[in-house]
View 1 (cartoon, rainbow over the protein chains, first blue to last red):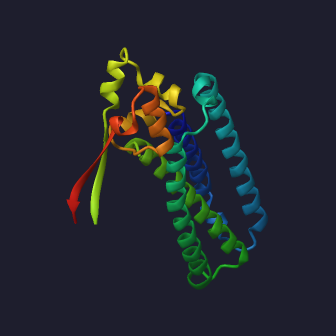
View 2: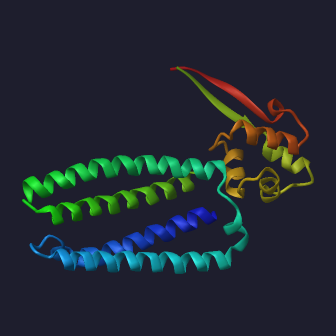
View 3: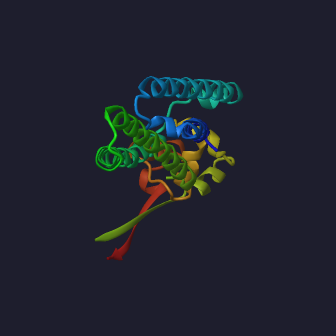
Length: 140
Length: 74
């Protein structure tokens, strides 16, 4: 397994872990007048994500110092771009659906719309890193 | 539409060059070992620049390392 694939696994696991943290408190996200609570929850999730990423990346860097110093080659850059393209479509479509559903179906306010867009971004990032891992596994 | 495949003889050339490892070849052409493995297996077609670097390592021309095959029309 290449160093980039290991870092992709780390990021995917970190996102999933933070998503689980968010989903435990999912009911709070769409409660009326919960703006500050939602902000604090998102703040905690972002800090947790950064900490998990930082610690895991440092561990990988210490264990594989030579691989960590090697810059991305053309195949790895291509994999990143292909995965990012898929994620961009997911984010675009996900945001539209999330905003439409929040306004017209759930009858949510601006806070709920913002939360839905953030959730669409999280889903797009999960797709991004899953696609990277699949491309690395396929070798192309 | 014409379908084509790119084949190569990198694996044979590596063994003819004192059993050069994928890692050694990767370091000499500036890519990762996994990329050399993907090129050898035909899963990834390298850029022209990498193809020239590989040929240079073995002291051959690009067309002596890589071959282009037509698979007919669809």
